[in-house]
Image (cartoon, rainbow over all chains, first blue to last red):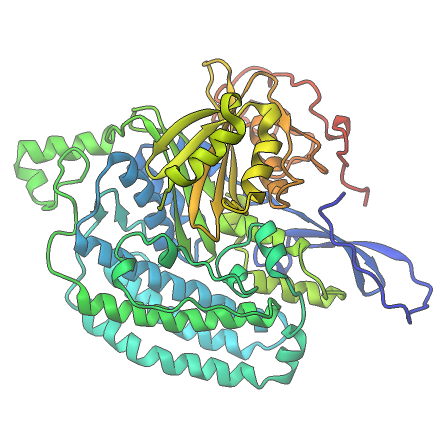
Length: 404
Length: 186
């Protein structure tokens, strides 16, 4: 088996130990879901690691083949459940490319803003969960406080806290409510101070630093070879962000930095995410400043639901349009498309083959967590079982996305 | 997504010419059809040529075109980090589907190929560890094939499944795969 890391024991160790095969998971708090690691241990040293995944496999891709394009949005919510708006956006962009349409500018701003809120929400969790895996409980309780604020904001826009399903092909479901703008301004004011609090809490925490600095180093070559993307790749010094390099939506109008670190260790990956949250706040503020008034949905009755829902009850045309779209969906021209966005975890790509019917012939999800989890084979300097926990936490896989 | 067909297109066509087919660009990505026996050579060329440097393998995806023939397809999405180009490689496969593995070119291909094997039964020759990845060992059939029912087949665990026995697949057990290794006893 080549896909396992062979880790050598230090030479001064001359104890007579017996090799043990240890199952870490699938039910283990530090595996962030149902991941099972089969570890070959020599005492406390990890000799081999063999991840077993699939405990959460729901057959999203197979299911999607029997759903209409609008019905697939809830499925994408459940990929990376920490940041559903980005998943919705990735799927909507892929279908829009096939249709050759673009959402109105206001809708694009709303989507980008929500995707960045989702990025903060996803990164917040790992900001607190990695220290928690290493024994520092406090940070997690603080980040949950701020995550709650984001949940409230998302609830205000969509009515749902987790599975938002807010994007539609050709726009978003509704316009922003009036009370949302002051609330998000307030959040943007508060949040940078809170990030400073986390840093103060953890940057001087000697145990946290000892457990993460210089641990689980992935070199830039290995990171590219193993297909890592997102903060995991940038922490190894590779300067690649799809938002900047292949701008989608309105990212080319926004001004933000791509955060990179050269160390490639667990601490660098954690730091990258913390810094990215600051950039996300900048992006949200710019979106709020630049967002124009206008329609939030494309004006194409064959694709978009009637904007005024009350019309459905009194206009025959609107009723037919609504019924038609709900029951049969809309046809998408024959062709294939691969569209990738920079999701919080990395490159989230949708490869869709359409045969001209209202349902995709094949939908492949390029899930960033699935690929990032392979990073576990590229780490060096993670000798102990306890280091494995730090590596796993810093790679930040969401098992729902790994297993699809 | 940026595409510079004029730049890399000529390089690729000069090198491979007749052996491959140019499928043109669709929605910003240029596609090439490559016969299975050329896939490793083609991938290595794209990765190692100094003017192309497609060093990042985004995705490998299996497709079942049932009832069309040849039935299967493996689709590769490559990205060039220095040049910011994307390219798609399509490889049409017969039944049983079989092609050489590109794990020697990119290590990340490992799990992608395991997924394609698990879901479509596409066999990657030379893969170091071709086991099922999502389904459990001993599962019969390849669930994402078009002729596999969405509900699965009826058995003691799945009372709502479709009638009929699962199609028998030759060489299904992992131990029959060269280089494959079943999970150690524990």
